[in-house]
Length: 355
Image 1 (cartoon, helix red, strand yellow):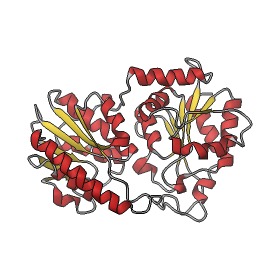
Image 2: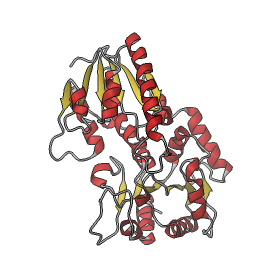
Image 3: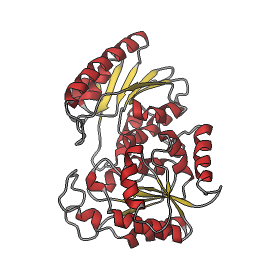
């Protein structure tokens, strides 16, 4: 397929890690066809990541409340329906005036399939094994060969389908000079000078089954600080209360970045870290994409499918647990996470950083 001067629409609205896993596809297409125009439909909370990317020409932020979130408020289905109708109408008007030649549905859901329909004049591509009837919306299907497990490897099959070979240079994230300056100023304000080693710790995730015990986080952070490595707890403003439960029982004083920096500034902060230590979540994938070594704690999810990609890393799992990778969001015993020891995690950090 000739992509020269073509307008290509990406549909990957969430989540954070999934968006990070899609960036190399845009980078590869733009590298092969610098005169193509890339647009991207994305949830507004993640729009800044895509807007920073130099290969993306147009960003279309949307907001449809998530109905799968176990903490979703009452009435979320009604709100999601109304938001969906309004979003579809707005996108349809936009794409009637400025249509795209090709739509790449990398989200592979019913909702993303409907979003693809708003660009009526283009050819629609999607995964052959997509869920929720998504395949019915597509003109062409990207087959996933047996043995391809990792989410990023699956996304890169779009490049193969479009005959755009992927290169090492396609694995990166963009930050602005202001993002980097803001991250550096934040560190300086908290006593971390240029070149000083710090660990970016991410103790929170969307699934409660991914959480590691508070007492172990406190012990690990104290050990790292004692060894001369500053600890920066990252996350969103919503994570501040949980992080406070960790820091309140620590003997040393860490740095709290959660809620203090934007998502884009957090990317710049993670890029400066000596190591990422934390859960399987969006920031872990950011760390991998900016080449920051990763010590990742895994329990209910599959590292083969969503683990750190193309970066020095250590996967930390509890030994002797039969129910690892259960994909459950609720658990009565949390054995897989409780079984990961502080010694395991600290040792991984030491090995990755050469402390």
